[in-house]
Image (cartoon, rainbow, N blue to C red; front, top):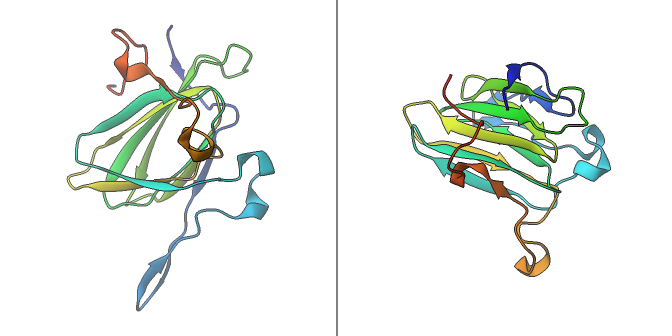
Length: 159
């Protein structure tokens, strides 16, 4: 499958604003009144990626990810639309996010996605998905299709 640049239906990208004072800063990540109920987070986790590290590509059958890229460091996020019923089928989006552009990105079910720390220091990413990892009490299969384990994948981080 070949992809072309374009906006992807259902992906939400919002700049995050830092409220700075003498103590440091604060950024709102999630507000219930700004997101449809079906996407409300049910858990949250933070990952740390070393410079150059790529996480993904992978996709979910039922889960929507709500990523916050705050820094430190910078990330390249790439999203691919493989949903044949979507008007943006075949599109790929690339965003540069993180320290110099704090950003919230909602990635709906069915979209392949990956991100890479392109900075020179470890970087943190917060995710607030709308499904529990491995279900209630971690008793269900993990909702993740790991494309990075495929021998050949069309989902590449290289330009």
